[in-house]
Image 1 (spheres, helix red, strand yellow):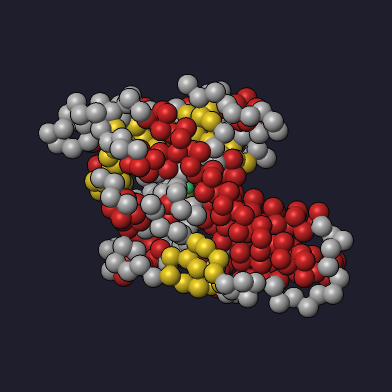
Image 2 (cartoon, rainbow, N blue to C red):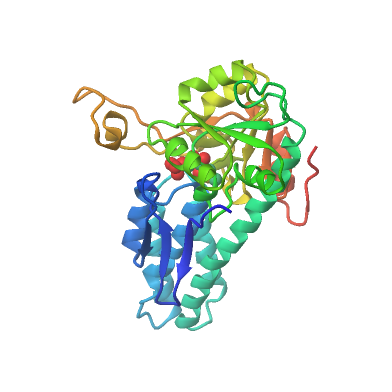
Length: 371
Ligand code: MRU
């Protein structure tokens, strides 16, 4: 079972306990976060990261911001809440789950405007905790639909000398595993389900420059869970696909536009193009909380740019001449034409995505038929 990324410990005066992912894989250390500024920093510095986990962290951060509020009336309390939401929204721009979670809390409070402030505070904490339970259920459902797509695809043979084995071998980029969510992951949820059910599965993890989420986090969490994993550098993905080792690519996403374009960790676009070239299905695990119907296409998704030092002196050692200009976008956008299926908690969607997403998000549509 994957480790818990974030949980609430103690009662209303308690803390959000989260794994400090900047220390992985050499140190497994938990942080107990009790104030909104520390939560903002934890999100900004990627101590907690991955779209769904960022959303949950922000919800707890919002609670921390107002739990000691002395506001005696709704309007004052709501103004404080909205200010804190705006502050947290500035921590990272790309993962829409952050804004989704903040809005969900703000809407909840607005819907109970007649209640006394202490009751509203309790509602916020309860809602943030509910997001963890929901996230677990969503990820498990994505796992089921993802596994349906993977089962029977195991022909590539994941390791040298295993050609033709029935092991399903997938390639993933960055970390959309347990540590990017409350516990189960999106892209890696089908992998954990396969492992649980004794279905042979093997993961190739792209290292994921510049911050090495694939090496530090994906490889670590799969190893912890006893799932076979092989680490490659990003520039080896073409070779392993050309060698026929990969049955499917599965990645996560930080935001899906209304037309099915997907933003994900920088380097995902290259993997998608390679997958098309080599005839490998390219699946994107996408909880509905990552879908942003307000953006018509992926070119409208705000892309985070991070500081040059992540490229020039990643992990403390200088690897580039001082002063060299650096461009460091943290995400890229993969056009919908490269996406074989979007795996949501309500089913797997196939193109054309504009229609499929609209239908999916219409209330009471129920399960979408996955092929
Ligand atoms: O910068 P990060 O580490 O937060 O980027 C994370 C990713 O790109 C993940 O693939 C994405 O958030 C999906 S998480 C289920």
